[in-house]
Image (cartoon, rainbow, N blue to C red; front, side, top):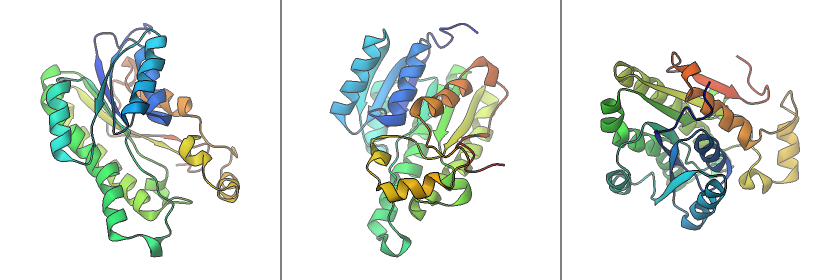
Amino acid sequence: MPEQYLAGCTALVTGAGQGLGRAISRQLAGLGAKIILGDVDADALDETARLIADQGGNTVTSVFDVSNADAVHSAFEDIGQIEILVNNAGVCPLTPPDEISEAEWDRVLAINLKGAFLCTQAALPGLQASGWGRVINIASAAGQMGGVAVGMHYAASKAGLLGLTKSFARHLAPYGVTVNAVAPGTIETDLTANWSEQVRQDLQAKIPLARFMQPDEVAAAVVFLCSPAAAAITGSTIDVNAGLLMR
């Protein structure tokens, strides 16, 4: 497989300012894609852009809120046509069910689920016109089995994302565009590093490999779905969870 097989492609990665989004952006850039870095944190985007520039990659930053339809549409007017969309932006509260407010429920669903819909919807004209494309949604094992440590609003948003993946896969298949999901277990990021040691230990004890995922391990699944080897895969979910969920 050519090392630069994504040369000439433009990829938008949301939530690209840190963690998994940064790892995905760096790996896709390493394969030759021009990366549109999307996030609400301009400073974090600048850092991701610097890291990719240091490795010889090509990026553009776009500061917008995926949960705001006007902001998404405005961003896409500037971004233009893309061939690859990675819906990675998300939030992951650990709030117990009896403490989840209506506002917090709405915020989690708006970012994690509605945001993926709005971005994919905005990308449709370009994807359909290109005749080739990839949409990858970052779901979660929690969306398949219920949250072990995370809030149930997070689990519900990721379960909805799996249904959205299948629906868009059917819609875009006639245009040569595949739509898939990657469902990680818990990933070692700044977010999970701030969890209490007890929460971390309790969760790791439930994982057969007894560890969390590294961002680059999950990003590798995204890269695979963008590769020629994955051309016949659509409407599917790749699990990267160290055995937490075995299907």
